[in-house]
Image (cartoon, rainbow, N blue to C red; front, top):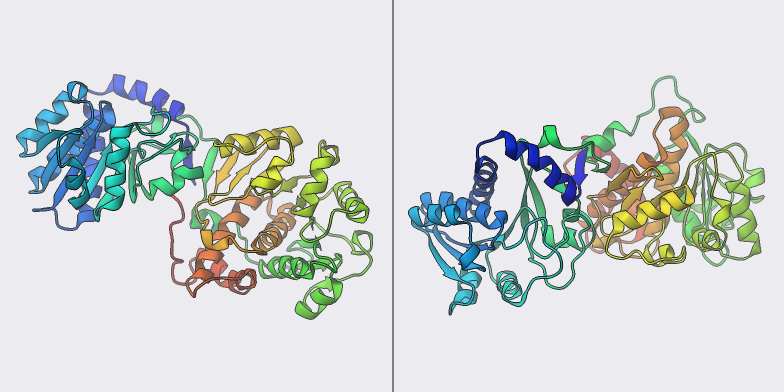
Length: 494
């Protein structure tokens, strides 16, 4: 797992390391890593045009020292100084000694210079930056975005909140971010994820000084380790039995999609007891279908309730019935609307509960998500005593104790009707295996989000996807995560 850290945690960890090493050592380590990644992205360094956007802080120094290294390899390096009287002096001296030159942000032609660069290094602000970029820095960021060069942020893209990913105004549009010592949360969540691009982590010796992480990102290997394949002694009852309460006469597709996703995730058995029995029977003969509701479905080890189920009194009664059981319950869609009216239905449950709101459903519980998505998910989880899976480009999964996962496989291709029903089916199947495998509910939800994103990326390789495409491609995605086929396009995280 990849640990994710707030800016304050990183700064606190840097203090003892700075005290224990000669002055400038950490900056040289960072600059060496930055120059290595920059050179690798360029391919050929000699003769390439490199522009450094250097602010007054340590990130500006990192960029200047990295630029000096690239200039030493034959690159034509120009530093654009945003605060000439507060520029990192040693870094600027090193750049000039290596053949680089320096201009100021207000000099004529600077914007055109940035636009023509082969590589632009953003060292304008660091992890302590707050708010959007000022006018001069914003103009440079926009020139870099419009240019043809590779844009690389130094530690964090200037203009994003390193802890939350919030962007208030203009931020630097990085294709890559070279971050030092630890992955900052703002690089993988919220708007920050879109500005960070591919994240490269450089070891500067910080690990021993970092606190235990409370936020994580799963890799494919982490997910594979949590997907226990059946053993020779297993039968259909030993691999998890999930009950599905999704769909209705008005929305039968929700039941079909949710049930199909649960089946394709391969628990031992899926029992369907929702309001679209005929459609589910026709689509999935592998499911055990009952017309009598949850009371007649038989024993299950987890329930999924809500997708397409309606918000009338009958739906409310079904929700209350399953929340009164002693098994894990995943609450989605219409059931979230009902629960927001009566949060007491879930508070105090002894068995795990997983809520899967998108932003509008989240707001029904009393407050908007806002810019700090991790903080918002944690607050609602603590308030309700439930795992909260906050859907989004980078889905956040938070446990009431604060343990958090940020998904790294999300894709905008999943923004289409029915994909949430598929996610619920995947997560419900994984929750049902928990009693056997010992998989905690928060991890089951995080694994589900990872698989959902992986499947979305796989399905989108063939063009615009429908929710049903996810159900069909899910076994292949699971196989690839387990290393049984070609790698799925896209990153598994930082």
